[in-house]
Amino acid sequence: MEQEHPGKIARAAGVVSGATLLSRILGFLRDLIIAKAFGAGTATDAFFAAFRIPNMLRELLGEGALSAAFIPVFTESFRTRGREGAWRLAWTVLTLLALLLVAIAIAGMLLAPWLIRLIAPGFHTIPSKFDLAIYLTRMMFPYILFIGVAALFMAILNSQGHFATPALSPSVLNIAMIGCALYLTPYVDPPIVALAIGVLIGGVGQLLIQIPAIWRRSRGARWGIDVGDPAVGRITRLMAPGVAGLAITQVNVFIGTLLASLMGEGGISVLYYAFRLIQLPIGLFGVAIATAAFPTMARQAANRSLGEVGATVAYAIRLVLFVTLPSMVGLMVFRIPIIQLLFERGAFDRTVTLATAEVVLFYAFGLGAYVSNRILVPAFYSLQDTATPVKIGMVAVMVNIASSLLLMRPLGLAGLALATALSSFVNLGLLLTALRRRLGQFPSLGFRSLAQVGGAAALMALVGVLLLHLRDPLTVEPSLRRAVVLTFELVISVTAFVVAAACMGSEELRGLLRWFIGWRRRVGGVPSGEDFH
Image (cartoon, rainbow, N blue to C red; front, side):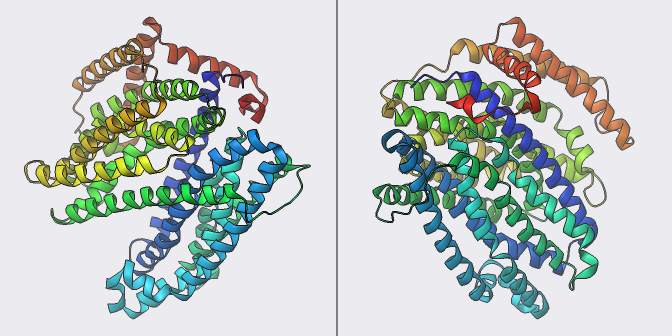
């Protein structure tokens, strides 16, 4: 197999990143519309509790674990069995997955009262709220069927080098919920039911938009099912640790929420708002580049080219750090004006802004580790090893718990954020060590490249601090003026980073520029699947 040029990862990551940005914007708009239409009360509490259950199952059974297990085996099947055998495996998995999800959806609707008692035990003291949550749960549980099948289609398309349609999938859900909240609310009783209908429509839409691309790529392959295919068992065995790994993440979130609840009123909200800011660069860069690199690593692993897997991992980490470190600097330096612009209004006063800014500072410290881990975990998945990341993840959770207990007293909520960052660095170090051992050889991450991006980020931080010193960030001023000034400061700071990186001859900057120039030349700006083969 011809070694794939690393610039293709940058191109694919650009597609995913752009689609992710669109989804984040639509998600923010959706939250604003829900808040305006329904506020915060019995109906919204019931809706969010009801949606949490199928959404959690989507994460555990649908997107993450399924993609991690399916893509390497499906990719290997193309090499060992040919196109016909690989698509027969895909149809078999589709049939079994659909049957499983139908059973889960039916069970969820039947067990809704007990599920609500488990996830929201306080609801049973308010019968109307409890009954509404049960009703909404039963309405939305079929969503797991639609999104589960859509997730399989997304995994197939990603393995074939098609990233645009799967990356746009979350936007479909947001658009459906926005449309129903705006136009369907007057016609249903209670009005919150419109959001549940939006979830179902969004799930169907997320599935339907994948079908044309799947149809084109499977054209000519005969439909066939082989339940006894050993590859199906291998996918199942690979999924089990993946589900366990995602469950560990849920435990981590639960523990953080529990500890924050012990630290006074508003602690949970402060952590939530702070991490919402951190999630933006993680989604735009970490998830985007990991999604783009995973099929490449899977093809290289299927071809037994372990050296190429290592080279892809090293390049992806350098690329993700190049685009993430400026985000880290921006969040750390401009955290107060960013939070003021986005959140400071109404009950979110200056005190909450300063508390959130302190937490953002410590969360942002670990941003490079968060996004690097997003690259390393799929590297293990490409080698069909889903157990190692779970074992390392369990160690990281223990570190997080111990660090939180040690730091929460002297640092408060910031201590919980710092504990999260420290555990992510531990996770990163263990993953790198294990992957180096697994590959037998691992290219250097490139001290020169890391020094270049570190130097450019340091200059950006200096420029940002100087700009902030020219004004008082706590001054009360109109939102429009605040937005204009903050945008100017961010543009100047990022320009300083880019100029410094260019002067030092950054390879990652050249790769991104080549991708951007190529994107401008391509009609529609979306690379075809052939770019990845």
